Length: 253
Length: 260
Image (cartoon, rainbow over all chains, first blue to last red; front, side):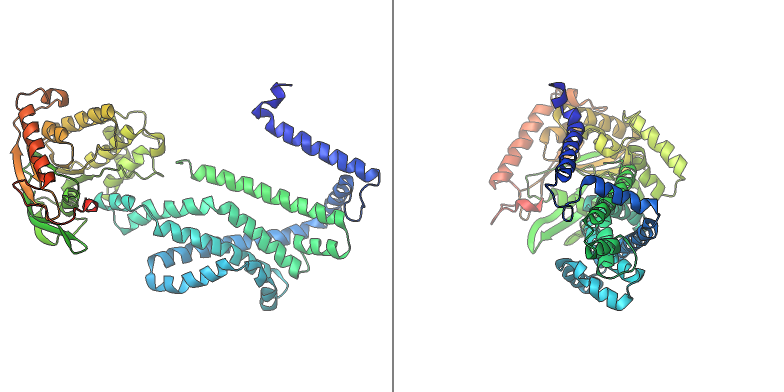
């Protein structure tokens, strides 16, 4: 008994607890204590999840959400890096870019979703745009900060060793920027999926967000919870990939 | 190297006035002084990192023959020891493989064989200092400018690192200008010690020649008969400066510690 309390078995204890909760939930459902309309049994959710994959209708939706999220992520990271560097190095442009970013940072950016649907239609464009805005602002502030707060001592060191502008960029600025982007990549990934799903939720004909919206309109709680679980797993897998990339590129930490 | 009549000011406040000193070839020169006397600033002027208010610095050497070492080791955290040491060589156009090989040689000279692939974070303070030294010495400078480079090390590591530096500097006949507030370090290492007076308007108030024979051993240098009287004299002169009645300029007004 004592050995089971060892910190090493924390995961085991967590899984066991989850199992007990699910079993109790299932049992409560069969006894009729829970209204299946609001709180479907875990087995019903499992079946809904299985059905999504069995008839293959989930794939086009997954593809739509992934395309939007990854497209927005890629463009947002690129734009954030470029704008961050430019704003940090060129004073005149920073006067223009920084206030816009501050405003975009202050508002909950998802409220732009309806506007983007008017501008870009209910297709992929509006979802990528929302993901993009969510991601770009976060990355912008990180890169802006990384360039502004670059370690002066390292800059002086490179200069006294005889390094020029290109060496400074390559040896000091780019590694600082890479580090700050990688550290915030998970936040950015989260935002990218938020943008894609919320965009689909507001107006779309495809995507996981659209399916959730569909499940809501048909009062299909089992499908809805199944979709939430699916998105959760997808994002966790991508987090794991981001962790691997971070570990590999940040060995020096 | 020759520093002539250099004056400095910070935000309109004069810090240093008309400081002159010279470092002969192969000579080890130290600059000591109370906090706020502007000794670090003087060195920064010599390094070309700061413009003097008046006066001039004549290095009498091409810039590439000068090595600079600060108090912090300022190694790139994302580069290994070997890569850090090879930086200066690469900036001078040396091929990558050759630069890395030379870096390894210098790391070995400083006792860091087997640590070439470590990142700075995975090295101790003394080891990082040695990497920073290798980085500078790999460029084979003729003049080494150092600003309290050993201040962050604990006593034992510090003595060992300094001993290695003295040996290398003596062997390679490198001239050194060292800024320090440690009088014992200054005397046991140097051929000449300059004392800066208390700032503001600090100036060089005295010059001491030290005739302990070379090659020097840090511990034995302290046993030399001329060591103790010199230390006492320097200490007395320095205390006079701090109290404001030295033979240099008498301090007026507030003392700006931040100027260092």
